[in-house]
Image 1 (cartoon, rainbow, N blue to C red):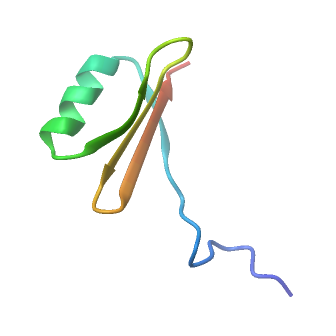
Image 2 (image 1 turned 90 degrees about the horizontal axis):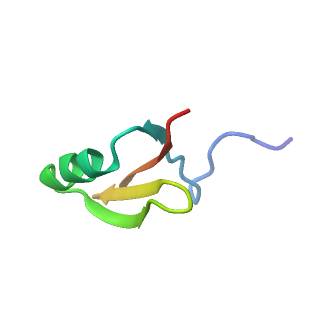
Image 3 (image 1 turned 120 degrees about the vertical axis):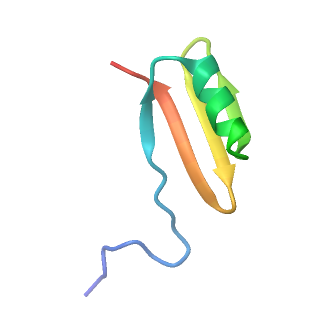
Length: 61
């Protein structure tokens, strides 16, 4: 039987909505997160990392 939970070599990264990219970038940078991906066109996508913890943002609907 296969265990369908998260395996030791897998991670779960939350994808959060973003309505203000510049403010979001400034906030997470101020908290010490590194920006690992930054794109605003043709679509919004931001990614941050701090000590192995990641957050990703896309356009809010």
